[in-house]
Image (cartoon, rainbow, N blue to C red):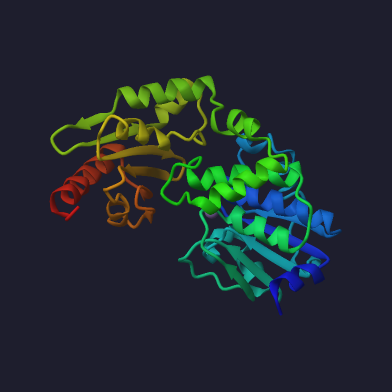
Length: 318
Ligand SMILES: [Mn+2]
C-alpha cells in the first residue's frame, strides 16, 4: 500500500524524534504533528531524550512525552529523521516489534527498516515532510511552516552547508510564504545565548591550543569551567570550532566534559575531511562536522587527537 494511504487510514499515531534531538528531527515532528491534527488524527510525540529548553519557543515542544508510551494505543508509529534503530533509545524494542511502522527519513545511509519506508535524499527531513504534507492536501499554516523552517535551518547550517541546494531554497521560500516566522527562528533559537554561555565560550576560545605548524586547533571545556560560569553542559560549545576555521585553520576540535565522558566536536574546512579523524576513535559524521567520544582525561584525549590530526594532515592525499 502506498504510504499516503497508510497515513490517511491511521487514527492514532505516534511520532518519534531521534535521541540527542536536533532542530531537524524536532521541527519536522512538530510540523507534521500540526498537519496530522488538521486531518483529524490523534497524535502523540515521543523522544528518548528531553527536548532542550532552546526549543520552547515552539509551544508544541511540551507535547513530547506528555503521555507514557504504550504501543497498543497506536495503529501507526512513524520515525522521523531516524536512520538507525538505536536512535529510538528506550522505545527501540516497542517500535521494532509494532506491526505498522513507517520510516520517513532523508539519510542515504542507515539500517532502520520499518514496515514501510520513505527515504528520499534531501538536505533536511523537513523537506520530505513538506512534500508529504502537500500530498496529504493539508493547508500549510504558521504552526506547520515555522517548525519546518527551523528544521531546514538546522540541517543546512542556515543555508550554508554543502547540502544546501535549490530545492532547499524553494521549500524555504514556500514556508515563508505560508507564514513561517523566520525572525523568531533566528532570534529565539540560533542567536539566543546565555551570559553563562558567552563567558564559557570566551574561556574555551582563549585557552585554545593552537598548532601553527600543521594548522589545527584543540579546545577543551572542562567540567570546572561549566561550573565556574554556571553553564549547563547542554550549552552548544562544539560550534566554537568554527571560530578558528574562520581564522584559516584546517581542523578544529572542541572537547566537552560531560557526565558520561568526553564528547568531541570536530570541524574542518571544506577541502579537509574531519570524519576520517573521528573514525579513528569509533566516531563519525559528516565530512566537515563530526564527533567522537573518549573515556579518558582531557589531557589524554588532547594528546590522542593531536597525534591523529597530524597523522591525517601529513599522510592524506588532500
Ligand atoms: Mn536530519
